Length: 296
Ligand code: MEV
Image (cartoon, rainbow, N blue to C red; front, side, top):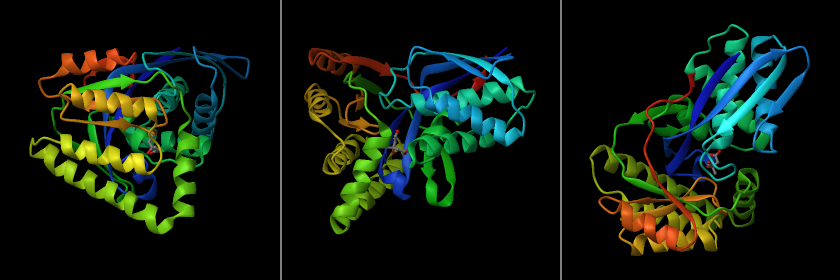
């Protein structure tokens, strides 16, 4: 029996635009998914709190194909992360499944290999995806991701963040498809929005590395995501309540449509948490996790 775990993530800048080759910045957070894998005679049995097993099934297929081996499996999943919330549970479960099953079969895959296979799983299930989530959950820390160059650079920064959860589950696949539809319908209007998000993200990298305030940049990024149609009433309410309570910046994080938002809160954790809870939502302090996927 082998157990592997991987952290969730928040996207700090660049979600959706990263699907079109623009850069993104993401940070692993200290909430984890654990995958326990055991060999059995039967084909594949999965137990978990969630009904959606597509990512686990695909991860098992991908790792079997990669290793050229297969076995009957029993997989048990437990998670600190709300499912379908934009905190990277699908990437974390894919990556932890790959690490656990490979190890069970006697293979110690390197992190780059695990991240690459994890991306293959997301692409297979979602149709369109960027390597942002799978890379960040595999390696941990804050990462600057450049999909066009296949480049990944860690950023050293301290970031006081609060995460607010709307409680609304949503599908990344549908939200990514919605942006594509909008872009196909109005390419001259939507492509510059996507490029602009890329410019915000490049500036955010410089500001983070210089230890500067990134509040305005988060607010601009949120406005551009609103224009892409991926925010909603619940997210906007939490974003505005956080800013009014003293957050320097706030934006949705991940695919949008519900899920989570983040607020940049130097010195104002408590006020911002109270403001989000005052809207009837869950709020938590998010600590960046330096550690990515690991065997337990
Ligand atoms: C989802 O966490 C982030 C998106 O940019 C999709 C992706 O990068 O695969 C919306």
